[in-house]
Image (cartoon, rainbow, N blue to C red; front, side, top):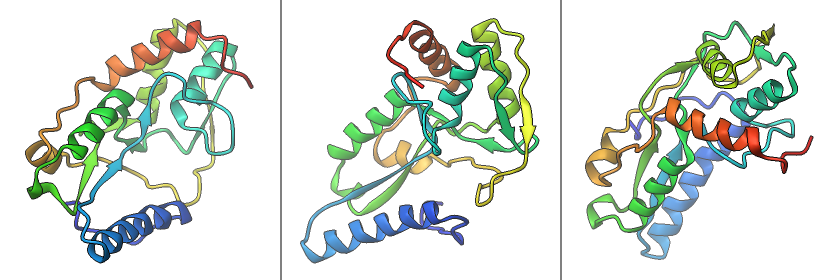
Length: 185
């Protein structure tokens, strides 16, 4: 699956693909082994809710902490494959120590689980014990409608196995976020 590249839908998607091309050319030119890791919606403690490109999970957590309604882009049924930061760290370590068989390959790093944005909001509301309701706005241009990673190649060649489910990661992230005084708006 990693070898099938669709038509990029946004400038961001183009930059991700160009990075892979650059690594491939660098590896070929300088006879260096490279391993590409495609991270799918990584989240975890210390992730900032600030800025135009802030990820949805810290944005939702900040809204819950502030008792404000977040805006969900679209109807909330769009899906993402989220992964907790510790899973991404595991993939990095396994990629670094990978066998020759994994050299010059690209791997998806995720949980292999499709989560819709409405479900995500409801799970975070439960963790926060909140009654705040979300608002809905227009879809964002260039966003992928649905995302689900096939992680079987990483499981096979890197021995990658997510150690944290999305729900476990959300709980750990919320616990940190709720206690944190370092998140500033």
